[in-house]
Image 1: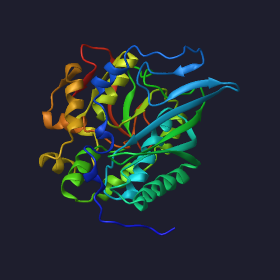
Image 2: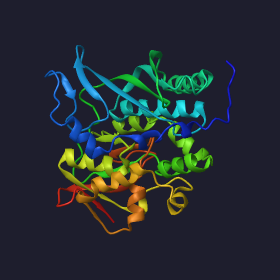
Image 3: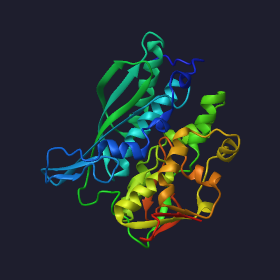
Image 4: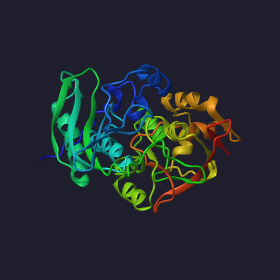
Length: 330
C-alpha cells in the first residue's frame, strides 16, 4: 500500500484534540447519574466507579471486557493520529488487566472537505497498532461528520478474579505511573503552532500491555489509565472509589521534554484547567498552581496509574487512610 504524506493540518478541522475534547468529568457524572441498565449478577464492573471498561462474567470462568474510545485529531499526521487513537482504545483493556481479542473501527469523516485517502491513512495507523497488540480488526462503523473523529470499540478477556479496578486501592500502597505526563500541553502547542514533538507521539503510540502484565504479576488489584481527566482527575476517582486518600510527591512525577516550556508559554488545553477546577474542592496542595495544571493536564493515551510498584514505573506517591481531602500534593 502506498504511504500518503500530506501537509494537511488535521488538528485545524476540530475544535478540540485527543482526550482533551472529553466532556468535563463533573458534567459527565451528572449526565449518567441514575442511569441503570438491566441488572445482572454477572456484571462485574459497570458504571458505578468510572472504570476503564465494562466487565461481565461468562461461562468458563472468563470475564469479557468491553470499551469504546474515539476523538478528534490530536496531531496533524493522519497515520500517527490513527496509531494514537488505537493505542488509546486498547489502553482501557490493559488498564483492567485484560488482553484485547477483537476491535472494530469508529470513524467520522467530513467527506466533502478532506480526501478519503487521508481517512485510509488513519485506518492504516489503527490497523498497524492492532497488529502490534495481536488483535484483529474486523470492520466497524463510519459516518459523514463535520469534524474528523476516529477510535475503536475493543473487546477483551480477563480473569474475573484478577481484574484491575478503580475501587481496590488500599492505604499503604505506593502510587506508580508508567508514562511521563505532558502530552496535553505539547499537543496544544502542536495544534497552535504546527511544531512537531516526536517524543509526545512516541509516548502516545506505546501500548500499555507490558505495564498491565507487570501489574498482574506483582499482584496489583487497582489501576486505571491516565487520559482526558489528567493524573489528578483519574487519581481522585480511584481514591474516592476505594475510600482512601492519595498523596502525590510533585517532584517525583516525570514529564516529557518540552512540557514545562509549553506550560510556561501558555499552551494549556481548556480540558486541563477544567480538570483542576473539578478536583480542587477535594485537593490540599503546597505547590504552585502551575504545577497543579501540569498534574491535571489532559493526557491522550497516557500510562497506567497503579496502586503498587511495578518494573518500569515511577513511584510518585502513596495511598493513605482517608482524610479530609481525597488528594494531597506536596
